[in-house]
Every structure is written in structure tokens, then in C-alpha cells.
Length: 218
Image 1: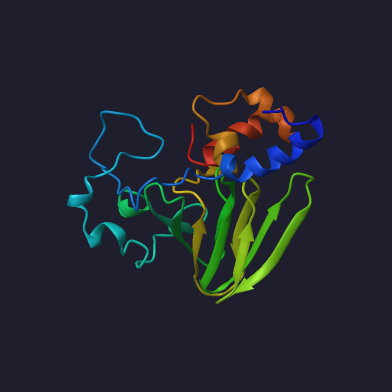
Image 2 (image 1 turned 90 degrees about the horizontal axis):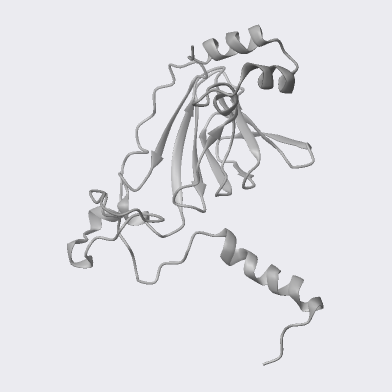
């Protein structure tokens, strides 16, 4: 068979992108997570025997209860992971809930493996993200509104109202990952050298120490 011409290679790469960037497709009807197995590392979790699977593996109520917002950011989150919803294993989806107290924020963060779509359950929020050209997109969203954040972008929410707000967020990965910008920068383990952070953020090393302490570090 003849090899593809150089001109066709970009087209072939474009056709491969959806396969490369998405969670792998399941090769059976379902692969309910065996959350008690720890003998082998999988990209995901090993499957329960289908004969042991019941309807309870495909449902959860963990998002029905508001979360505690008593922290420095005024936000609480719950993630429906394979621990509480083992039926999502290998399906390439997940879902979470965030509750934002008055004056609170979902701090700037990113998901390396997933796009996010969020539905506002209640309240008035400012949602925004920054793209790779440093362009800032933002929009005020209210009860019933939906907002989307592209994969890998740093994004946030701020409660603009006078009452608590809450939202449900869905992802096109069972494990989207989350990198909270303040913690990634100032609470890594081991710590990024203060001189690096001072130069990067144009602050003093003393300020680096203060920020770390303010975020609960030492």
C-alpha cells in the first residue's frame, strides 16, 4: 500500500486528535469500578464482575447535600468520583457540585484533562477564564444559566449575590484533575524556591512567605 503524501499528514493528525485527547472508549457495556482492588495500577480502575453489578453502582446522592463553605475561599465542593459512583468508570464523564458562600470564590484553577460545563442551581455568579493568549472572558451567570470552560484554561467563579450560590459542573473525563492556581504556586510539595516565586510574581521573598502562611502553609 502506498504511503500517505506529506500533504495528507496534517489531515490524518486532525482525524486522530479526538481519539488522542479523549478518555478511552469502553470495550464493553460498562466497567463498574472495583474500588477495593489495589493490586494492579490501571488507567482508571479494574472492573467488577458484571454478575456482581447492581443498579446502585450507577447512582449516587452525594451531590444532594450543600457543602461546607467555612474556609479561606468561602467555597465547598463535592465530586462524584468512582468511590461514590463506580459506574462512571471508563465512561469518560464526571460531575461535581460547588457551593459558594456570600463573598466567596471558586479560586482560579484548571483541569488538564477535561472541558467543563456548569449549570447554576441558584445565585448570581461571575464566571471567567483566560485563554492561551491571555485574553480574559467573563460573564455574569444567574440561576438556570450555563457556562463552559475549555480544557486547560484557568477559570473561576465569584459569588456576586447577597445569598449563597451553588452550581453543578460536568466534565468529559472521569478524572479531570484540578490544579488550584494559588496552591500550585505557593503550596507545592516540595515547595518552589521562594526566589523563583518572587521573581515570577514580582514580589519579595518575604511576601512569598506571607502568602504561603495565608494559604495555610508554613
